Length: 283
Ligand code: MG
Image (cartoon, rainbow, N blue to C red; front, side, top):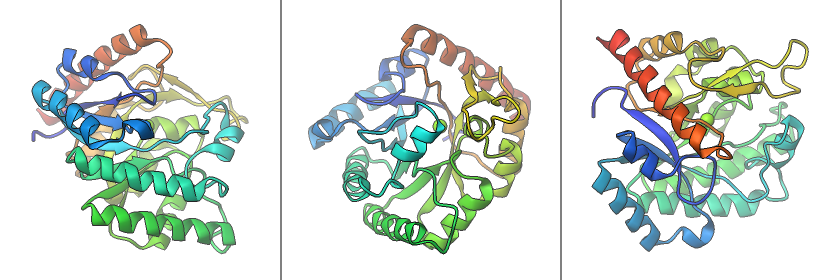
């Protein structure tokens, strides 16, 4: 595959991504997919989706897990509801994530991904240790499917994410780097963070955002904006990806599923911007 093929985050029936026909219309060659709901995670549904992708010349590069009960309404709600961190739902979500890994295998995809949630700060705490064990158990199942797990960035600082990956100690745990999330969650400068975690970056999002007001960072979300209009600095971001040797897909994410018309228009603009920057940087 060419270096930095454009990609877009899509949904089968859940999540905030665009539908596959948008990728097809915009001639985007790769997609990440938000896993469908349980009842649609069948061999038949996988084959159907795969056939549609093959017909359109689209490759599925990652399958993202997401769960009932998750809410990104604000940062405190995200802490309480998202990923494998909340203990009450952890066992069922790990089981579900294993099922999503099996579904991804049916899509012939070697990468699953998720927001694991806000990893507890204290590395010696019981809650941190139990999260490590659950993650190891999940990774062993994923490994059995010949896959890796890429953690979405944003909810941890770069340093804490590195600690966590080291403490999990498995060779199939990597990172899906989302520069906008570092800004939206107020967890650090995205370019500095990218350099820090570079050796684990196996997939990326191209998304943009502006910081929350000074003094509110980390307590209130910043705002997601169309690519190129926020504080990430897209040219610098792509130049840094080149510098760290990342050659994989540039997957556009625009999380405004409530406005499909604007979402599609913004993604079209993002494709133009990335195509232009690729030309400029790669020659
Ligand atoms: Mg993202």
